[in-house]
Image (cartoon, rainbow over all chains, first blue to last red; front, side, top):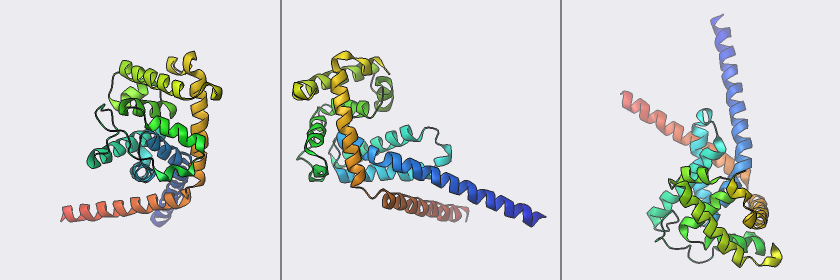
Length: 177
Length: 61
């Protein structure tokens, strides 16, 4: 009797683990590339973006059962991982106006068509604070959500967003809009 | 939708950039072996869990 109950418990645990793994796999396929693209738009090289996204995904899987909003969780973790690595390597891309712009164009971005490369280059050339806010905005976050992630006041986020979009609008020629 | 996203001054700009980024995302996905990446993540997570288990046993001793 006890063995039967234990066997049923083990089978349930295996099924539960498999369902959990399937759910994570589905999430990973939906969000991995999008997370990498967000970090590239923030100024990361493709390699750094992939490393940060992978690190965030490992952390997500390790606590998958307790994460209520995995997309937001992975976005936040990947972004903070990228900032941490940027500070360590002094390629800062966080909310600090004194930090430099991304250096030379990343040859890894050659996988994108010309117009997508141009848009990404324009985003990556924004001043750091505007760049971060704008990348998060085009990833679908609202100003209050961006404020929550970056620790900046909502009014500051909105101001960065407005300045960034004005600059972008001036550069992206009117015949494309 | 927020007031930020509804701003008519930037509606066409936002729409254009969103479309370009969606295309870029599709290109990135096409150039990524996502299954291999997933396998690497699961393997790395298993390795990390194993390391924690070893450390926990060591601490108990």
